[in-house]
Length: 211
Picture 1 (cartoon, one colour):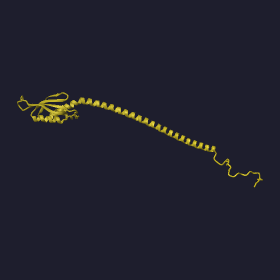
Picture 2: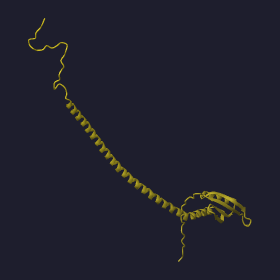
Picture 3: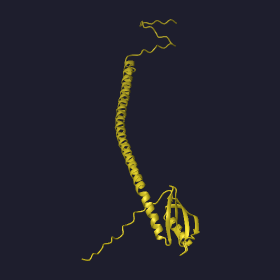
Picture 4: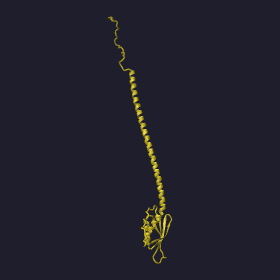
């Protein structure tokens, strides 16, 4: 059978589909997407730039404060060093004065204390004293060996001598009226001699004159 199309419109063939044609407005525009991405990127970069600038300013402020603190500490250290130097110089002056004072009054006080010790010991008297710098030799007379022993003990108690030894003792035959003993003591000086205050002056005697 033969069919005739009187409308003049071609009949679509079966088994084939027509391709879809996109029309404007159906999807996002690439230009708009690009613009949005540009704005977002610029915003992120701006935020990062401001953050970096703020961090830089903060570090500069902290650096300035650190420099000020360093200068203050440097001034404090300089003042402290100057004070310590002046204190050391003052201490050296004091030491020199003390040494000069000890050299001036030391031997006098030493001999005064030795003389007082001998005077307080009964039945002994000295005939000679020899000082060689390291030790002192005492030569004298005593009425008994016990008096010599007492003198040695009293000299040791002063603290002026490291050792007190007897070198020689013998009976003096030249003295006929009483028993007498010659003695010689060797006393090694102590390394550090004790500082003793000078003896207090005794009461003054006044002569009563009759009118």
